[in-house]
Amino acid sequence: MNTRLFVFVSLCLLAQLSAWAQFNRPVYDTVTTQGIRYKAELSGIASSSSRTPFWLRSNQFGTVPLESPAGIVSLGATGLWGDATQNRKPYFKASVEAVGNATRHSRFVLPEAYAAIRLGHGELYVGRRKEINGITDTLLTSGSYAWSGNAVPITQIRIGTKDYAPLKFTKDLIAVNAFFSHGWFTNTDSLQNVYLHAKALYVRIGKPSWKVRFYGGMSHYVQWGGYSPYLNNSLSNKGYLPSDWNAYKKALWPSAVDDENTGGFTAFDTANRSGNHLGSIDLALEVNLSKSNLLFYIQRPWEDMSGVVFGNLPDGLYGFRWKKPLTQSSGFQIAQFTAEFMTTMNQSGPKYPKGNDDYFHNYQYIDGWTHQQRIVGTPFVTRWMDASPRWYNLRGPFKNFSMISNNRVQLLHLAAVGYFPSGISVRALASQSWNSGRPYSAAPLPGGAKQFSGLVEVVVPQGKWGGLEWKATLALDKGEWLTSSLAGMLTIRKSGWF
Image (tube, rainbow, N blue to C red; front, side, top):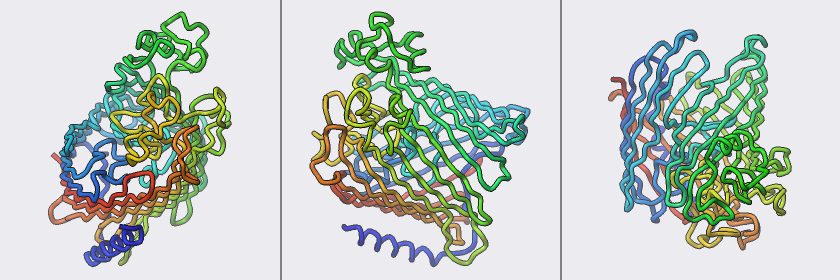
């Protein structure tokens, strides 16, 4: 099926649903009052190929399988104890979600299981939590660059703020949002006992009442420690990577390793840094208009100092979001529109060691920036098994040491969401990418392998049944990079309070 037919079928589906319109506000599933809220979902996927299309499985916290057909069962509950409106008293929150995938290779996923204590703007949590890090639109984005919500969350102990905390001595002119955490990657056959170090600091300049506010900040993530039976002694100490206090200090602050003969460091550590470091530098401008809100944002990737000092320009994710509140209306309303452009083609130039950044790849951490078989950052950087089989050998230099096959990408992404007066919501995503493999492994096509991925999703609430809703999704992959596929997904969801 071509792109025009995909759009035509989608419009026909929307036209059929528009006949059900009656005024109602959408219900947002957030727990801000005391109690326990549960949800249960049952989904089925059917596809024209054995692959699930990109936008059905991406940015879903690793819960949707790569292969199709598939059945998905999800059960979850979130509880809050205490008064969340009292800034001077602590309150507690906990959540758990379990997902089962029924495919040819069935699996069980635990995307969320955490307990948190909160006081004012501060929070401490332990476990796995669904979250997106970075300054971006979180509803319709193609994926926040470094931490997108694409992979199963990593188990962590995290302390930080749960939102922007105003600094009182600035009279609310400056607010900060920050976190600091230690985590544990799930073991694979390639890597065991790998740690995560993560921290970020974001600043907002402008009082809540101002029409224009500025944002800026930086995130820092590190894979460190661990063991791999596949690493030789130039990359490891008999397969082991430094994991003591000295190694943690190098993860905390990526200073140079002076002596490879101490602390289990290797020649690779002295030439680079101990651990796999990466992150993004984010900037944003928010404008409140009389009837809408605008957000302009940039996320600039970095993997070493060349990226920190902007030596990899113009690499980054460039985004724009427009949104407005719903009004009393008899017709369909667009609530939000998002447009993004991403390029990762420069990578500080082709020459190592000051260039060839090779995003999300690392020769010691051979799974790359992944967790439980998914990219942790933007899903448009792909593993070799995510692509069409024709590209399985396109993995760049030292391909036996790389899960990442494609990190030189250009992307144009458009998305919108709207509502009928009945509360029926419609979400549409359209992404055109050009994929050129890794450094030194350009795809043998002018401008890279072209790929279109699209999705249309309709959610129909059933008010008479109290918390019941139906969701119908149609997704298409058409192009050269991914396996061409058209798939439909039907979901029934029930939520409520114990």
